[in-house]
Image 1 (cartoon, rainbow, N blue to C red):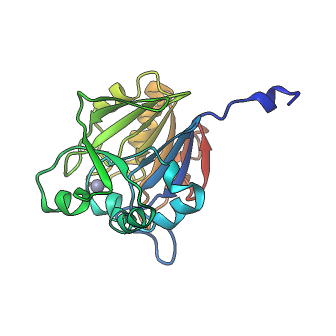
Image 2 (tube, protein in one colour):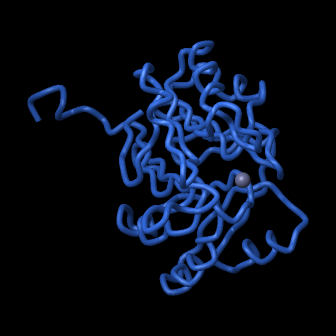
Length: 240
Ligand SMILES: [Zn+2]
C-alpha cells in the first residue's frame, strides 16, 4: 500500500444485471436490474426477469441492504417471485422500498414474510448505510419513481419514464444518470427517446448511462458523438 491507488476507496459502482425491456433479446439477456455498491452498502434497483442468478453470482445475497422498485411492471419485478424461495432457504429478510399500489400484483409480489416493505413517495428521505435516498415522480403508464442515491457520488436512476421536467430536479448536482432513454427518435410510447437523452446531457452536462433496450434496437450509434452518453452492457460494472 505505498501508492495513492492502493489507498483509493472503492467509490460508487453499478453492475448491470439486465438491460432489456419489456422482454429480453432472443437467446440472451435479462430485463431491468442494477446493483449499486458504495463503500460497503449495497442497493438493488429493480429485479427483472432472468436477473436472480446473475445477482447471486456477483454478491452474497445476505450482504444486500435493500431493494428499490421504480414501479411494478413485470419486467422490473418478476424475479422477486423466485427470489422469495431463495430468501426462505437462507432464512433471510430483505427490505424493499416501493410506492404503495392497490393492486393484485402488489399483494402477490410483496406480501411475503421474507420481505419488509417500506412505502416511499416524493416526501420520503431514507438513510441506508452510507447512502441517502430520495425519490422523484416520473411519467409512465403506472406510477414510477426515480431514485436519487447520494453516497460517495450522486447517482440517479429513472426507472421507466418519458421525459419529464422532474428529471432535472432529480439530477441537480448529480454525477451520473441511469436512464430509460434508448428508444429511437420518433418512438411514440412510455419511454424516453435518444434525442431527449442528448438534450438532457447538453443542458446539464451530466454523464448518462442509457438502458431499457428494446430487443430489436440498440442506441450505440445514436450516442457515438457523445463521450458522456453510453449504452450499457449487461454484467458490465460502471464506476461512477
Ligand atoms: Zn414499465
